[in-house]
Length: 155
Image (cartoon, rainbow, N blue to C red; front, side, top):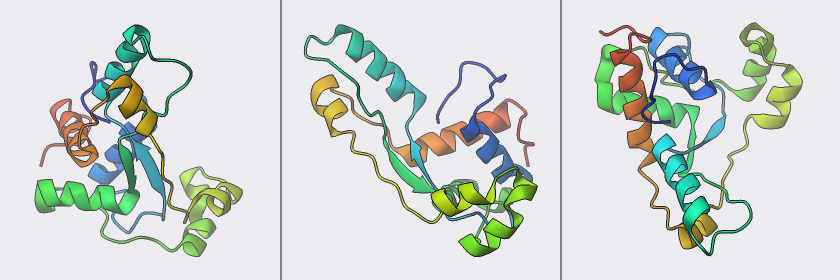
């Protein structure tokens, strides 16, 4: 999440936020959580991993997790009623029935939705000195950039 260097980008987070802005998710979102990190934090982590003497091995770089519904509420709290953000969560069993219409396999829904996820990025904080940005602010900034770039229509 966060500011992008170009408007021509393809990513899962861009697609999710685009759907939040065009009304695709107005009826509700599935019970799914996402690990979120600001792209600037990822850049900081890459730099630190290359130049910190104590850096070694792999690191989890994650500022926190939010459910799709929490992302919608965050955006609604900032942008108000200008956009058709989701207000409800669709029960997993119901979403499982309609999943193929969204290009998802029912098996994926069964295995991945309805389970909160958490990541422990403490090692990246301790060894790389990463100070994670507020993930809600990153979501807001990313959505604003989609508006500024014309990917989401300004309202």
